[in-house]
Length: 134
Image (cartoon, rainbow, N blue to C red):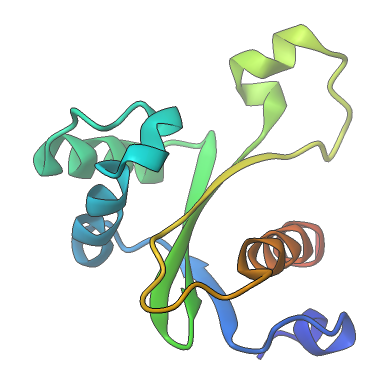
């Protein structure tokens, strides 16, 4: 377990690791096809197109992609990026250390857990502030 999880009292069943495109793409592709994922604008993307997109992201230097787990099952996707390398940086005065992120919670594996999305967001923020800035 990461030190910040215990120190901040975060849900100990949630964990984050880098996306493994070859092993994880089918999972996240299925999530992109769900109605609630329309924001990602990937509902008409084939599995192979998604694989190519995320392979290119991993080979670039503008974004990192992570898969989050709950009790060792895939539960959410998180992308982090640096505004100074992104078009967003042209729209505000970027400061050293600024980081942006997108996240999507996958479908519940069973009965929805109250407060789960809040817990995921707390983990993402802790990960970004404690891991990426360590």
